Image 1: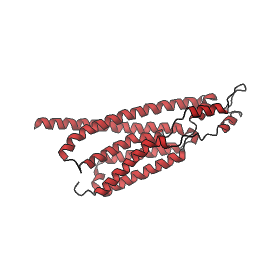
Image 2 (image 1 turned 90 degrees about the horizontal axis):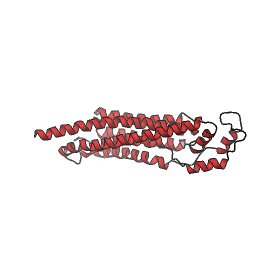
Image 3 (image 1 turned 180 degrees about the vertical axis):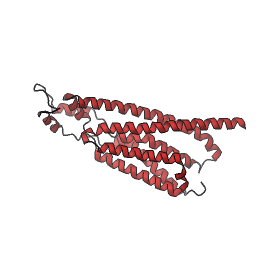
Length: 263
């Protein structure tokens, strides 16, 4: 790494740090106000169709509004789940940066232990995300299919999604990732020869694209459903990479122990 252009490397590191910060904060930064026209939903119940209510049913519009206000579920689960995968990418690049500050012998001993800890954290976090998103997905689908009352409940609680804000956040994330890749390339071309790093970068870009695609495939009132699907996909990708990191760290630790014993 003697010819490493350090300023560009730190630009790449800062770009990936910004990506992770945006992803972790997006779920709470995106607007949570309902964009659903509840008056329109109620008027649809008076027409023939899946939402038509029985003549003796009384569903007050204010009840739906109260239900929505009592369940202020923040959107953006799909975007925030990207943080597990991109956190691994940030960790990988940070390890490379430590070679600039820490002697190689010390870094070799710490790398396996740190990788093991990070892999376990990402593994547990991605599993929690998968089960949480799956539970939310099953609940939303069950409500939406249980017409008419379940569908109305779904529309009141989940029938909204800030697609514009989410698209803007995803565009920013993609831009930062491209800046990261370009800065890494110009910092040292040998980074592109690291197959593991490049596969992780490609997986990150693919996950970003999948979340964007799933958000745009459906109307706004169904976007919470596809957002949960996107969260599951992103978390599964992070889970796979966490297992790879876990195995790699165990191999590294075993090699370090054998080396110490042989001395």
